[in-house]
Amino acid sequence: MGKLLDRVNFPEDLKKLDIRELPQLAGEIRELMVDIISRTGGHLAASLGVVELTIALHYVFDTPADKIVWDVGHQTYTHKILTGRKDSFSSIRQQGGISGFPKREESPFDTFGTGHSSTSISAALGMAETRFLSGEKHKVIAVIGDGSLMSGIAFEGLNQAGHLKRDFIVILNDNEMSISPNVGALSSYLSRLISGQTYNTVREDVKSILQHIPGIGQSMYRIAKYSEEFVKSIFVPGLIFEELGFKYMGPILGHRIDHLVDTFRNIKKLHGPILVHIITKKGKGYKPAETDPVSFHGLGPFEKETGKPLASSSSGPSYTKVFGDTLARLAREDSRIIAITAGMTGGTGLDQFAREFPERFYDVGIAEQHAITFAAGMCIDGYRPVVAIYSTFLQRAYDQIVHDVCLQNLPVIFMLDRAGIVGEDGPTHHGLFDISYLRHIPNIVLMAPKDENELQHMLYTAVHLKSPVAIRYPRGNGMNIPLDSSLEKLAPGKAEVLKRGSAAAILALGNTVHPALRAAEKLEAEGIACTVVNSRFVKPIDEDLICEMAQTIGSIITVEEHVLHGGFGSAVLEVLNRHQLNTVKLCCLGIPDNFVEHGTQKMLRAKYGIDADGISAAVKKVINGDYSSIAQNRKSAFG
Image (cartoon, rainbow, N blue to C red; front, side, top):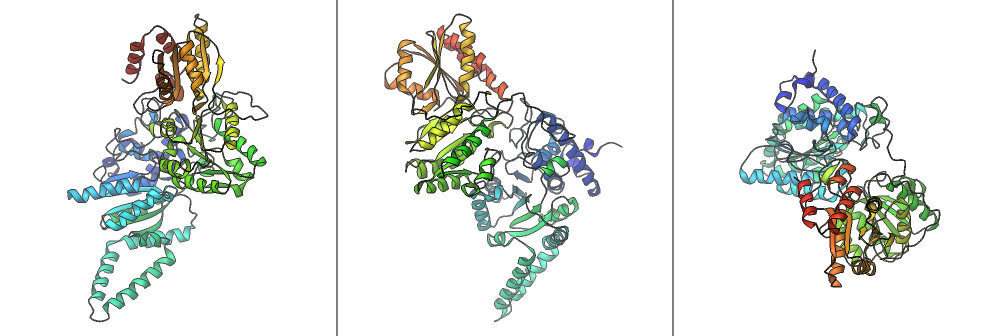
């Protein structure tokens, strides 16, 4: 007998199955998912936890006419398998393959592109409102996790949804709550009962009858309503949603497809804002992921049988670990140091700090705006908060950086993990804009280390500066450079000349410094001697050294793993313009004006010409005055 999954490519195929076959289908989807992700890596635990929920949604609702908006997108692997991408699922997160997140260009079933959290309610509500304005009747469903619901934008969306009173469904996927089988079964039964048409019809009829009884009707209705709310409050943890104007259903066990299907069929007939509270288990159906859902949230390739990660090709410590170890070391000597993160304790390397200094560690959840202003408040009383957030997520708190930190010149330290190209997670996660959105803000100091050893010196320097500081560093392992035992303060705004040569000057920033050195070695073998500069500081920038290079060498190549617009190369151009050094030959290497796709870091760096081969090729072309060739190569790289 063949697999059910062999017969299912789209939701219309799914609807042909008997409801009793759906649990078997769920098992087959989990088997496929674990098999593929063990080879490609990905966000496994969240997707394993919503297999039944996803099946039930596509089984009951008429997608893509009915619109499902997934929050973050970590949990959409089953959705992709059921919406025409089963045969291409093995290419997920691979260069040229399907995205690991919802992507509108990829499928009409991906109604809204996501990769950052907490946007689903607002986006889906916008779709619900335009449906109303257009006079259409389809359903709109937002699926959001309990972690994402902590973000302010999610509550802003809930607040407006309750005000507008449109037909709108929010699925709260709660994968943290522990719930006993008895309570779960009772709640599931009550929710299916409450969501049923009979209950709601009777409820509205009773309301109408009581309100029309002369004299005492309104009082009787208020008593009945209070009684109903009292009874519901005993069984249902959803009064906050009721107060926001939602009809609350749940909690419902999220791995009982029959219960989910019954509930969704019922709520299709209801009107107004509805919130359905689903209890799921991260990693469901794969024991290693159930046991350690944090590690299986996002991971590289692993052994399918054991769940153990495959050995990395790099033996050096990760930048993330070096940061975490250094911060803990500094905190032992300085009681003013505070660590703050936004729902990413492990991801930002703060596990050790949290264990060692629990009273000085704060994970504020997915609330980047709050994290920044919270840190600013701590600075007022002399503390030194260090805020560790991925570069791409710090974008969410731009106003707080400007208004609450830099305007008041408060010494908050921003540690921008995953700056630059992050790889397979793609355009929503690449940290390619931080220099542009930070460099122009007054008072801030902006640094980037050439390797993991320099990272610890930069953090030590930041702790002793009296202004806001941002340090950007890449995802992944370092260069396996020995770590200095003693830390030193770097002179703000002073670059480091690593190699001298007269043919050209390569001004490299951050993790492009070592590729620049390798390029210089390759060029030297061809008789082309280059100066290589570890620029270190984007702001303040080393104007004296840049002017010296322009006047004594005449050919300059800047290299950065960042967009060219407003980046480090732009800063160098501004220096040359200020000093009227406009005759220098200059080439800026970096990311052009487009969003970078997903793929391995190595492949993407090669494609955009910021690896050793790309740098050496650019140097030769600049020396020869062949700028058109550089432009043409870039154009061909982008199709």
